[in-house]
Image 1: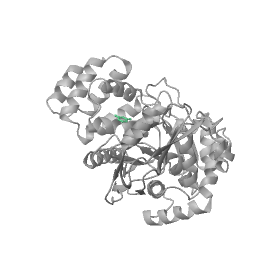
Image 2: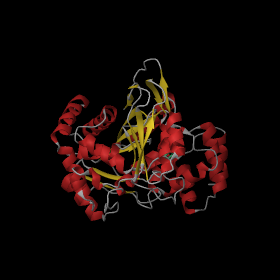
Image 3: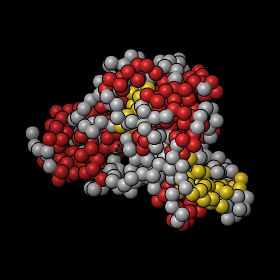
Image 4: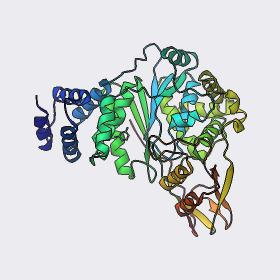
Length: 433
Ligand code: URA
């Protein structure tokens, strides 16, 4: 077999066989197929696409290219979740303890963030002493004991995807639906769960800007999962404005705890309850979505979920007292108010710009090497459709530097105020099963 023939075949819009995809991914991973041939193939895929079979085969081969986590030592149906990412997205910190508290085992690997704010692992590391690495035995024991563990992604998970994603990034081929879907799903498949719930974000602060694109991505990922015998459900949720009130790392942990106590912001709570309900149904703990949703509303009121979160923090080396004493989380030196310059109704809070404003403060990374400042971030005091009077505080900047003009200007520009009443944005757009 020769790579040049596979590139030509794809260029002509023909489908590659399983053996051909296997040959290509194996060769690219071990270095016998060079970057220039792989990028020509990626560009051919960009224009010609992949059929459902090719997409599943590509996903499977990338999942097999490195470590594959064997979760058979954990009892029950293991359910994973994944978010395509957004600003203020702390859903894993809430949903995982929520479903664990009713008996759904979650053995989760999460990544760090690049750009905008940090990833789940960065947020957890804002807790002093918290360890994102566990031995295999600790990882399994924690999930068997209280149904959850959350660690950083293994260094050798899906090396083929790591290489190909890096290549796509510099060859104008990131934006291909089957390549995005197979990239995300290969990591989920290699992580070993039996069922997967995907939170596909749509809007200004998301990877997918239009509902049409989000639906296509969701459908492609669900089809891959089902093809590979993993029950997969995708929930399309709003990311036009940031999720919840807090953007940053320590302050997002604080907000997650509030939601787990049943005192969280309404839209964030709704997304979490929805994701948790689909996970619990997939894990066969509840018979249907409506029963699960009602049960989880009760769980939030009962304190059961926050108790699981406290156990999880303690088991991974952190101080569980932060659940009742959030001031134990890192605090910034300065708190600067952002004031409304006109009266009316909040029309837009551009999530992407707010993400950049938080990154300028040090809450996210511009490059992989950047250090995150866990204490800094932004607290929104208003959401879209809220009424606002002139001079009212619309956001608070938490900073360790007195000079925050760049972030302040960006927040002012991202928040649009209209004189006329504004409708609330939807929060859940669609569910694809
Ligand atoms: N996230 C991924 O993991 N892969 C992509 O291709 C795009 C987003």
